[in-house]
Length: 189
Ligand SMILES: [Zn+2]
Image (cartoon, rainbow, N blue to C red; front, top):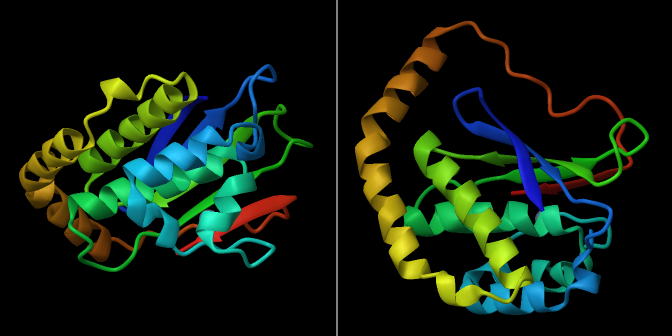
C-alpha cells in the first residue's frame, strides 16, 4: 500500500490518494493478521464508530474490509490518542470508483485539528500497515510515536488556531462531500 498524494483543505480535512498494486491484497479478508495485530496495538480501535452497508461494528467490519478503510480508522485513532480522546470525534471516509480510476486506487479523507500531527499520523498509519503486513512490528514503538506527535501538537497549536481564524473570516465555500455517485463509500464519525 502506498500513499501517492496528500491534500490538506478547508483547514481541517486531509484527502489521500492510496494505491494498492494488483499483486497485493485489497481486502483484510486476505490478510487476517492485519486487523488481528492492529487491534492488539490499538485496542480502542475496535470500539470506533463505523458506518458501513451491513451495519457491522468496526471490530467485525475490519475482518473483511478494504485495507484503505482500515487505514482511515488508524489515522483517526492515532490522532485521537495524541489528544487523549478529548474533543469532537474525527470523521473519515473512504471511497473508490474503478470505472473512473485505475483499479486499486482509493480516496481516503480524514478530519484533523493539527496539520503536522495529521501528517505524522498518516505516515505512522502507513508504516504500521506495511510493518504488520511484512511481519516486522518490532520496529514500531507506539508509545514513543504517540508522545512524539503530542510534542508536535504542542508546537503547532498556535498556527492551527490562527488558520481557523483566517478560515472563519473568509467567505470560502465549503466543498460538498462528493455529490457524484460512487459505487462504494464508507463514512465514519
Ligand atoms: Zn469505517
